[in-house]
Amino acid sequence: MKSCSESYRRAGVDITAGYRAVELMKQYIARTMTENVLSGLGGFGGLFELPEGLKKPVLVAGTDGVGTKLKLSFLLKRYDTVGIDCVAMCVNDVICCGARPLFFLDYIACGRNVPERIAELVKGVSEGCVQAGSSLIGGETAEMPGFYPEDEYDLAGFSVGIVEKDRIIDGRGVREGDRLIALPSSGVHSNGFSLIRKVFDLDRISKEEAEEPLALLGGRSLGESLLFPTRIYVKPLLSLMERVELKGLSHITGGGFYENIPRSIPDGLGARIRKRDVRVLPIFRLIEERGEIPERDMYNTFNMGVGMTLIVSREQEEKALSLLLGLGLSAYSLGEIVSSREKLLLE
Image (spheres, rainbow, N blue to C red):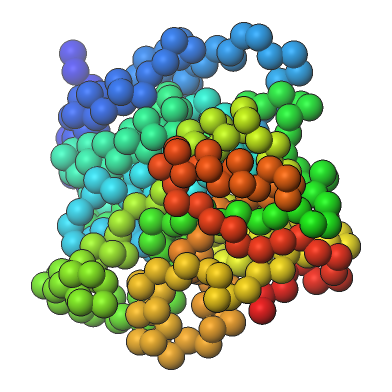
């Protein structure tokens, strides 16, 4: 006998829709499976066997959500990209410790379970996991009528990675004279959207207005530019770590340059960056102009076109830049580490 409940359905929760959503998402989850996954869908927990060959393995965990960028997903009725953001916000944090992401779990809460929509969300999560080389080993979909509006949802998740204890990247090896390298972002990524929504009045504009092409954005619409998913840096960085000593890594998320770059720099040192060297993307110029936002606030809120920063020795800078270019990232020199009481000197 199949599980069902008419009473629960009359209260607004359709458990059969949940089963339908699971059937639809199976094809996407299958793409993320590796030989270390020991369980399938439907269990009470996801089982993952640790890789062999590590001497002193350390697990590294990170969790995050997509935030109010989801409002744009609701407006444009597009659900297949925000899952990439959810994965990216977690695995890009985990890689900052030098850890390879092993597996991911997601959590979706919604006002009404529309199986096709849930499957599209998981499709994006699965794509993010594939980009990160991570397995999607579990998750939860919660239908919560009366708590969320029918056509809205929230999306969050967490990643667990692994690193050898003596290869943890924690900034302790950073020295004066080391170089700072920028990895370009793919856009706004998934931070600062409460301010962006206010600047562009996204809670009131129509879908048609959001999809109108803008010359300043190279013909892209505002909606397309803002919804574009967060870049995942895991695979190129893991490859780079095999050839170059990375002393520090910073994922530029909420808080922008001022909050995130200092997190990889020891006390007594600071990163000197010249603003003219930052390759600012057009979307940030538009946000700054349309919202009349002070430049200081822009750099304290957004990534400004820099998704990650790396710290390497001066001797290895050119090698790192060359390797990154070969890995498909247009990395560039952003600044240097100097003796300073301030962790960030943005000149």
